Length: 257
Length: 283
Image 1 (cartoon, chains in turn green, brown):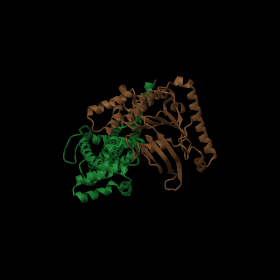
Image 2 (tube, rainbow over the protein chains, first blue to last red):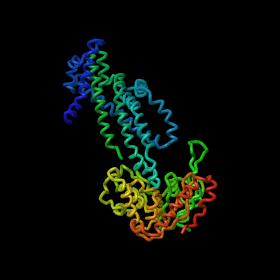
Image 3 (cartoon, rainbow over the protein chains, first blue to last red):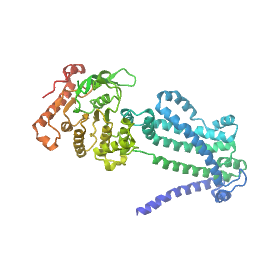
Image 4 (cartoon, rainbow over the protein chains, first blue to last red):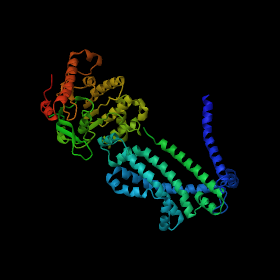
């Protein structure tokens, strides 16, 4: 009996997808005539999906290849984001002085859209690739910064008292108590940052025209192949979902207590 | 001169974030503890017991008065006043061995690694946890966790071991076992111990002297009640002893008295009348 319920429960996500496809079909046949239907999208995208790693020129590659290029770009930006964001978060959490000084700046920089950063990146670096990575890093950094700071501040005072009674050196307190104590928060920050980095990739590739899922999307819009826009959107969604799942597995491994 | 001395210590906290209104927690605390003595401080919850332990530990500073260890004023926290905290004080990302090792390493950093390992294992053995050495706190029962906390406290090799209601979160049976083990460990190690508790029977089972802390605000210590029964004390025997009955009666009377005085007198009045002389031990 319970087994059948489990089976039905497992089918529910597919029901959701089916409803979504139905909705899409209805929209494409009624209101938005230019929107390709799911069937048409599949037919025109087949080549890119079934043969995901073909390469026929810079901007005409299999979707797997485009996704890979985007992922590489995102990884670089994300790594830069956490390399800068983590220490910054620790400083903010550890020092009230530092917090009071830099928190306003951070609060102002945080809501700035990648679309605003990218031209600045192009001005600074004069090349699209570093500008894209700069944009990703700058936009994706904040959840790491803020979560790390919160993690440091939420360490139980008892643990800090243990360190004080033992007269641990500042370095040892950091290594034995503050870092492990804030790790769960830090990894939540990483997960959110990676999500943001992936969100930013499309915008930065669109503006720089770099080969990747976002660049492909923009190019196909300009060449009026609308089904490939949908192909790109779905790819972006699936990869984003996968990244989030991956990071929550990593996050759970660092949960203590 | 006593081994650990507290002289005229006052402590208050500000009531609000920036307001000048202060809440007096402890007032005119005087205490003299001899070496190897086991002292229990009994008080109701909220009477400032943890504040008192934090003061002795050096985690907070008194507004007035001073605390001397071996005649020297204490200067901040130090392993020579090792603390066993109430609960949840083990570092959850370290296993039993690492938690205890942290203390061993902190006080004996220069010893060779093998020696430090031996010491760590020694203290874990002392609390009967050798089998759980590689377990992390979340895999341990409440009683086992507090054993580790005791082991860590002892591993600091303190001159005075401070214990802040170490067993209060445990069920009665586990508490009983741990009390007996603590008595055994105390006899083996001959440490000077200051233990805070809200359990009079626990105090009588373990302590040489019991002090009562009146209910706050402005809590102060009552006179010492001596427990003369020799160690080891057996719970079952203790119940039948006349001296046990007497000690229990006196302690309860002091605690009730403390509450009554709270109810009538204003703080200043109470301070004048109540237990200002610390040395008049009731016999």
